[in-house]
Length: 240
Image (cartoon, rainbow, N blue to C red; front, side):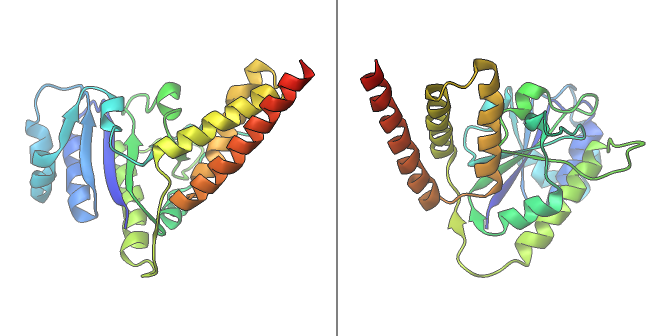
């Protein structure tokens, strides 16, 4: 079973932090808080109730990069959806996320943004998968702790009652980043316009992330991508 790490990015209200600790106690996970925007944890402890121990064990870090230093997969949450022209915000539902995680092992960080503005585009780019909670178009934004509750509930349902069959170790971040690097080199050699490369690269990242590619599969893919890159490189040298 995978390990869930709930990452609150610059939370602005201590009550939401306490409520999140309580929800983790209800369901599952560890808590990491990135650069909280309040000075006292008193209200957070009051709201945590029986989740006080979760809050006491929470890691408080100064940057998102530090929070993600030991995870295998990064999931970001957003209420602002993309479309076919905005692949950086292409999202799946919490239910699809939970179904995908049933058959993988590893540390999975789920990022929740600020109450006022959510996660920035730069923070979303760090994610392997983006998740959104379907809501009314008239008012799509949920309270932070309510969003945490819905996602942890879906994960708890799927991960606590899932299949007992062998669960493959998910591909690590280093291997996925190497695959993306090879892919980038390939499309550059193919002559893609420079401004198109980030979008094509993100689309490739979305595909391998949502497929929950395993460690064995990523090594097989790396071998194929490396071979394609080397063949293209050799061909370009001959043409020169």
